[in-house]
Length: 142
Ligand code: FES
Image (cartoon, rainbow, N blue to C red; front, side, top):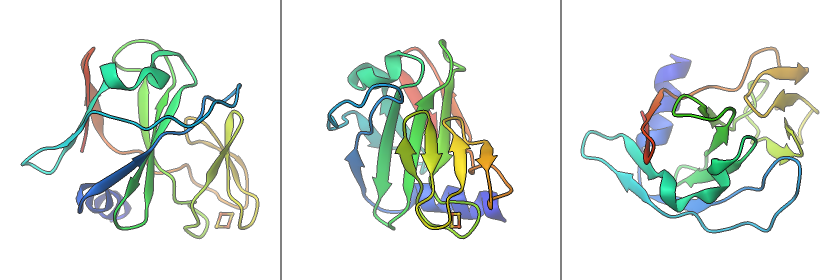
């Protein structure tokens, strides 16, 4: 059920973009580019247009029209090194914010690693991960 809701949240409506910052060095936000919503509802991201994802720890965020936010995190090098997270806190749904190498929930203080694992409660479960596949040039979410 949670997976289906998260997938629907990703696939609905028009998408507005905002780019986050790298985890260890705060950088000015850079507008993202290269998003394409496919006819099958999946989302393609042109990785060549998102240089923040070239280095491990790089993050871009995507704000969906339904108010939820998604992050793409470079957790390792290579095509399998990208993790796509729903940024709704698993405790009570508040959007988490990047704080260095972690996601911090402003509501009750839960913390998650950049890859989405719980590092401090009250949340007990990891941030939802969207299914994704990648090539050297394109990340497909959904
Ligand atoms: S909603 Fe995030 S810690 Fe409660």
